Length: 231
Image (cartoon, rainbow, N blue to C red):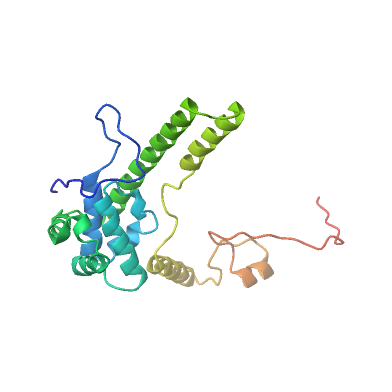
């Protein structure tokens, strides 16, 4: 994979210390952008995890923003459509022009690994956000922080908000869900059973619900006036 350069600068990122720059992976960013412009299915694998602001390079943010907008309107996400979207908004030059788009496209990623590249980008962004939050706390501490406990609570909350940011998506592609559902139905049919889930032993309940299934919350309740006796 070709080494990509930073184009367009960065925004809302922590300040480097003594010449050091915040953690990032331009190759992973380029690999994701190249994959989504090559394979129509690649965007689905990262769209629930990544947002434009997760990219370190401003140019990469602009390119991924174009991909997000094109996908949202049902248009194909390819290098021509991305270039047109950027050009119509006077942003093509900001990302380095068609030459840089072509450079990104030629990054030659392993498309099958696009989800892993996306997780790398997201992890680097989370670390940068933590660094940025710490720098803001430090700057406020050197100036006027007000009441100490409120200042400490605010700093703790800032770190907690970053810590609870999801690392992955639980969203599944519809075709995968449908395939798995039909697989379970066919398996139950092969057994000659009408129960597609886990039988409870209560025949009437199993006939109504077809058993217990993953992802379901089942609540068994009765009116308050019904006496419940256990033995």
